[in-house]
Length: 622
Image (cartoon, rainbow, N blue to C red):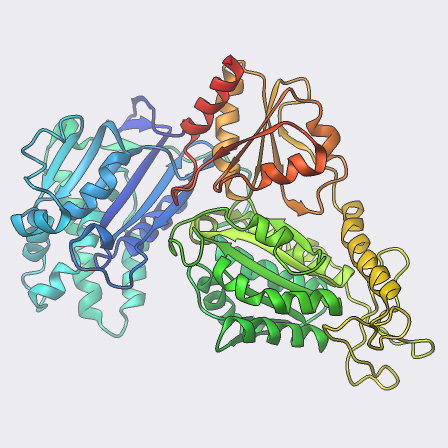
């Protein structure tokens, strides 16, 4: 599993760990996401590899102190390669009883529990659903507990700040952060600089937060709480040299789309409608206008996708994004793009379904929808990103395939990938893929469904080009003129052409490779999307034990790689971990007639490494 291991005491007297998993949890108004993001920044600057998992409530403002309003931020960081946000917690910082109730099950036995005792009162126990004080009923006996009245200590530290009591209490997240900074030997200056910049127009707020941060740090230095509050040290990770920055999946997708449009020599036009957890993509791209990005917030999902189709018709890269419910609304217009054979990128940040489901929770719920979910025979390309950093490369690939083959491409992300973060090595901009689009210029013999004989892509004629006047649309067109056609043979021909064009893309993608292991292993774990991290770490651990386990991970969901069936046929057992009820496993069975088995989870949370390890052992022992 991916968690901490004490190695030895370092020269400073701190206990040296190879990794640790820390979660900050509190009310949605306690600033847990901000606290976690600042700890992430400090950890990245310390040279550790890391992965994060923001977890926040679906309600905009749930009742204060209730379990419905708990917001949390988890980070796994270490001196080795980190592939997941961690299984069990080493440290849980609980700012109120509700946070304790929601997140305590994730804390490992013997883990460190830090609670704000100032918020542990009868009123908050009732709000959280406790019938008695959990500190007194023995339920916390398996943990090392540090009780600190953070609320009072924050007020004491800010008694001369001039802030009201309410304003001062808003700084207690910085007090907690200062304490955890001391625990792990983190530098405060990056956070101090950030606070000074963020509250430049309210310097008294910046000063108060910095004072709270320093007070929490000073408490750790002077409290002398022994083993209950041990100081730890985690050395820098050994990672490839280069310039790195912390990146979320939404940021990587945004920059990848910009890089893809640049590689195609086209303008990026992003048309979207806000929906959780996809909205962050619109937020990021709206700030990139200086890179030639046009963003348009439409009045609804249908308007958004239709506007993106219009942008592609006009000679740009039309991109739209949503989550499963919004993609459902876009479906008819996606069929229009398939019929008109226009490039279109649809980013789906998947969340738990059906209908509105659990808006802030992650799931791999939309593979069926992406591959099959349109009326008629309407094939398109489906890609899946495996991690926040991988979103950059997959976004470039989506633009490349969409423009080369004149087809819509669905790019699958999910709530975990979109919001999670990891270090990303900045690429050499001059080495990024280039695939300039060649618009049709030849007027002689032109019609809109004239095709490239190799790719079967139709020509792309920009409206307004003299001599290339034409019409396209959702009603079937004649293959040799572009005129409306109800001819049966023509419909068969056009359906076959669109199918063969998309299936032919398999020749333009790399052969499927195994991530780990070989075909001489007995069992292969086949994954896609954000299951990459837990599968990869589980296979690492299992192979260290000598078990015959391999790992195969798909980026191209449709069409599937040409060699995939042959590769899978070499294994006795095929297990497909998915955060759904068995969608990829159905696709693999239908395409290759292999005895694939599902390992399915729909809890709204990513797989734990131990869950995958246990499932593999059970199958190998059967």
